[in-house]
Length: 311
Image (tube, rainbow, N blue to C red; front, side, top):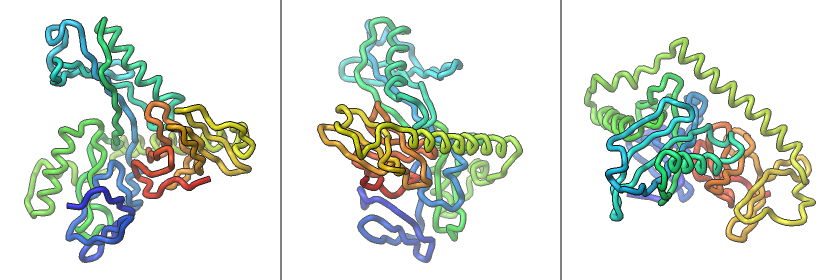
């Protein structure tokens, strides 16, 4: 097993070649289970919508007797979910929800703080223990894309679009892909293999991509209007903050984390979106297709495979 290697491309030869940052590797079959597929063919980055959501673990006065048993999902917007988790100090309540499109809100921190506040309001006296986030992908018809990859010559496969049901859809995808590779037939898996496009699916896809196009225009316009010019900035951003400005006509992303100030190109290396500062997780997130980058520009999540360039 090889871990910790960044995959930057896959060639569907015989054998298939996986191109990594450290050199090539070969395999009889390759499964792309990278959230959003890192290969452009098939345009799956445009066929899925990417969203971030949050979970806050809380200790509730009264312990297990005060916590609802089971799992619950609300019908209001934004959606909230409740479930429990074991802990040495006693059962915890997990409050989830407040999802939003990646990179398209003014403040991610406000969303996760709002989720914690919702938990306290509904469970008075609850104390936050920890918080975290997730990134999820959903298709237009809400059915995951699982199986062969276009032009993969039967050697490249994909799995994406779990729509926040990874514990079930992820397992189903694994079983389906295993059957594909071993030559088995699973009747129920044919639903995921038949990628028919119905009118409603087409409309949903068009809507997603219209929103992407609108966002592209807005973020570039905002970057061009940003002040001040980074080249003339006299002081770095405050600790834990980041902003997008410009150096001449070039959008620049600047942040300060742990006393280190980094200035990067604000242009996403995937399809040229302008990245947005995620104030909850201190990352640069692309509002187009969900690529995410560390404060120093290192790519954290695809479909981008290259880091943000130094400004």
